[in-house]
Amino acid sequence: MHELQLPLSDADIRALHVGEEVSLSGTIVTGRDAAHTWLLGARRTEVADLLRGSLLYHCGPVVSKSAAGWSFVAAGPTTSIREEPYEAEVIKNYGLRGVIGKGGMGPKTLAALQAHGAAYFHAIGGLATLIAQSVHRVRQVFMLEEFGVPEALWVIDVQDFRALVTMDAHGHSWHDTIRESSEGMAQQLLQTPRKKPQENSVRP
Image (cartoon, rainbow, N blue to C red; front, top):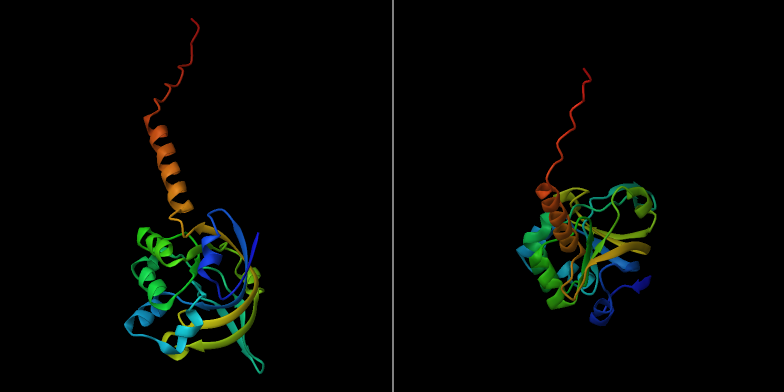
């Protein structure tokens, strides 16, 4: 288990390999479709320092508000592949050290992880309320009125956020490995001759 304190350095990321578990603590930012489009529309100086060395979490949270401020009720990961057209540029432009999500990403993002010293951290889907317990504070929120709660950029402090490295800065992707293995097994099954069912023998 790697216990990582954000912000992360290039050396922190290069020390990670696919299959390793991590515990993340520090400040991260949530961001989905609208956030990626917004980040690439111009240089967003208001969030640039927050993103540098940090992680972008593909998450549309459920939140509540009280006199004490905002709190996360559920914080499950969103499917990441839909951000594939944008992620490489966001990583490059804002100095991200990685993203958190589920399902993995494609070759463009994998190349960016290797080039810029970043990693993909897979969070477990279906544990939204449990993950929310690792969110200790909502520091601020950007574009809430414009995008709404799920698409806004929430700046949160997390403690012991558990995840698995499934794409690393060395060009390795577990998602590719599993897909290739599954496709190979499927081909073998399709090519295996089927046994003819035995006919019931009838005695005279």
